[in-house]
Image (cartoon, rainbow, N blue to C red; front, side, top):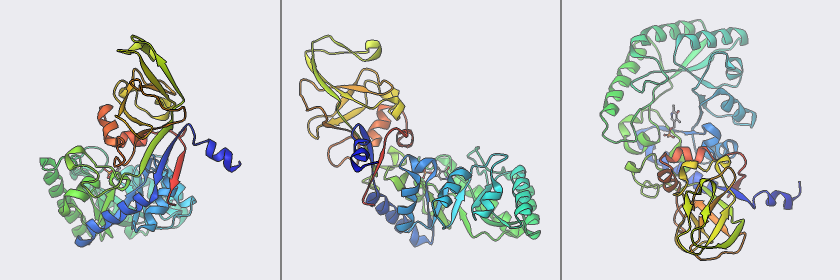
Length: 387
Ligand SMILES: *Cc1c(COP(=O)(O)O)cnc(C)c1O
């Protein structure tokens, strides 16, 4: 493919990924948890929250991320295939998943239940190598993890497998339900349960390399939850975990992704003209419409119909999605202004150039910023800046 061909892929729309910003966020987060002695895991699951897993993982390691974390083993194995060699954990295992490959790849593998311990010990016997496992406690989230009542049995079975040379219990860990709502009573309750479950396991003979419970929100607001390691996902990408925690700028973070498109058509239409499917929008005077070639197949939420903000041409007020977001395109009312076809329409970016942020899109779509970035689809090319 020629260079021209390459760049023509980026004309319609692109998601620029500023790796300088990503590295700065990693350094900021690391400095934030280092005084208490904790290390930083950069969470790169779900294609690095839509930013592109392999380039992000490389940049995060270069900036000092001590660990990387993924949800599925397939994601972690893809990182190993791309050459990553550092501490790497994955936590979402399903019966039949590739435990053998995980052992060979030196992954830290989460175990929440007896079925997982049975599969991982069988894999250890097949490969002839001890598996690195991290036991997950359900301290109150009610999602994955082992209930306190079942903990003694799981810890006992893991220690027996360790004595048999099948596993090494490298970690004890858990996950918060409401860390993004500072002061929520479940936070202190989960911390108490975590301390008790860790104490039980240690008394029984587990000597973990790492104990961890903090996500981005807890990394930013709750030093007593840092333990040996924090798992930072959303903050790594320069996005605030929730509006309650402040803006990215207030948290010292720099947004990494800028999503933009080239305006494909600009035209004058009369007053009373319906716009897009269902005619949920009608022009209230003669005006100009701009066509933005991004739609719900690119991950633009259809829920943002009539609301999503866009900065067109680098000046002027934010325009709003006029009418419905379609599969491949949406329209903005330019209020009589014109821009040349090909003008840049920025949906979200760092915000300091006057453009909307991902948080603005989350609000306009009745969702969280996490969902906005992770849903940007593979049809939108990622363009890496400052590699
Ligand atoms: C996704 C995830 C994280 C990262 O959460 P953020 O809120 O993005 O920091 C941490 N731990 C687990 C278990 C996760 O699934």
